[in-house]
Structure formats: structure tokens, C-alpha cells
Image 1 (cartoon, rainbow, N blue to C red):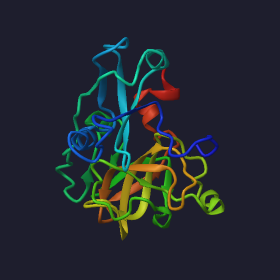
Image 2 (cartoon, rainbow, N blue to C red; image 1 turned 180 degrees about the vertical axis):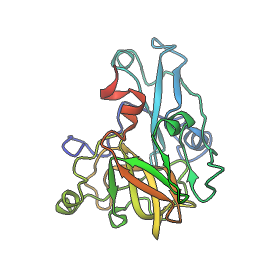
Image 3 (tube, rainbow, N blue to C red; image 1 turned 120 degrees about the vertical axis):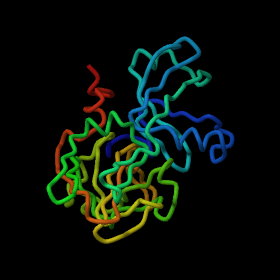
Amino acid sequence: MFDLAGDHIEPCVSLSSDPKEPNKDPNRAFNAFSCIGNEAVIISGEAKGARGVVTGHHGGVEHVIVDFDDAVLEKITQDDKILIRAYGQGLSLTDYPDIKLFSLDPGVLKGMGIIASNDGKLEVPVAAVVPGMFMGSGLGHNDVYKGDYDIQTSDREAIKRNHLDKLRLGDFVAIQDHDSSYGWTYKEGAVTIGVIIHTDSHLAGHGPGVQTVMTSSKSLIVPRINPDANIGIYLKIGRWRG
């Protein structure tokens, strides 16, 4: 992801319901209700009927990102219409009211391997733990439900020391001391779980994009390192497609 010749690369297909006015409805709603793991169905064109999977949404440009297999990519055009079966926004853990969920299909949640501990906390598998000091572009925005924020990568040595140089698209990560309940902000003891949805950037304050899927302002989320904590592996898409 760090060696690609590009900036803020979105993997596979980028969608907008209105590219001329991306920050207004209907595109705002399109982004807000599309959740990681939702099914995408092509409803026009040569690839009509083909199915893919939502892998994230990218704030600023306001794109929904969808994975399709290579055969579909050979047929799809920019004029094709794609239906997202939006499901998951508003999902909650009724036994854990202080843990909030965003933009996550319930099927993905079930497949994450989360373990409930005896002390009222949840152990969540992640590929990496990101110290809060690395977070940059997106801080202060309140559109957690439809955007992302970036891991700053301008200090490459610090990135390596914290084992972040091997991050992959689709990885689940835990961001320390960050609360995303009502926007992205620093709060000691808080933990945010997110998914890497776009590649690195050379712009100041930018880097790999993280879409929030879970957060707690209290110390109720315990990250557990698992190299396989990746939506590609869970959903068998991208390079892990059979």
C-alpha cells in the first residue's frame, strides 16, 4: 500500500450518486447509508446482475468504494447504475450502550471474532494498533457515519517503529485515545476501531484512510492483534477471492 504510484488510491470501483454536487443529497444519503459488507448490484449495462461488496466510503470526495471481481471490471462503465442494499447504519449493541457502531453490515460484525470478556469489555481483533498522535486529516469533522480520517505517514521512521508500515487495504485497526462518538477527537482511554479504505498520501496531514466502525469514549474496547483481521479475508474479496 505504501509503494503504489498514486495518492489516496481507492481500490476497485468508486461510486457517486451525483459527482457534480457530492456534498449534497442524494449523494450524502448514498454515502451515509452504505455500510462495509453491504451487497452492491449492477442494474444496467453489460455487467447487469453482477454483484460486489462495499469496502468503505471516502470523505471529502464523498465516494462509496465497492469491490467487484476482475471479470466484472472488464465490462463495467462509468454510465452503469449500481444499487447498494444498504443495511447496518444504526446498528447497536444493546448489552454495551457505551460502545457505538457505524457503517458496518451486521454480517461483518458477526464474522469479526469479537470476544466478550468477564469485565464488561469487548476484545476486538485488529491487524495493528495506531497511537492517536498519528491521526490527521479529518479530525474535528462530525461525519463519522459517511467519511474517513487519515493516519499521518510523513514520519516514516515513526511509522516503522509502531509497526504500521505493513498496513493493508481492508485491515481493521485500533486507534488509541480517540473517540468517534460525535466526530473524530482525542480522548485519553477511548478506542476507535476502523478499516483502512484508501492508500497512502504524500500530502501534509494525510495518509491511509480509516473508516470508523466502532468506538467507545470509555476503555471498553480491548484490541487483540490478529494479522488476519481484514475485510478481504472475512468476506473473501479482493486478493483473497477464491
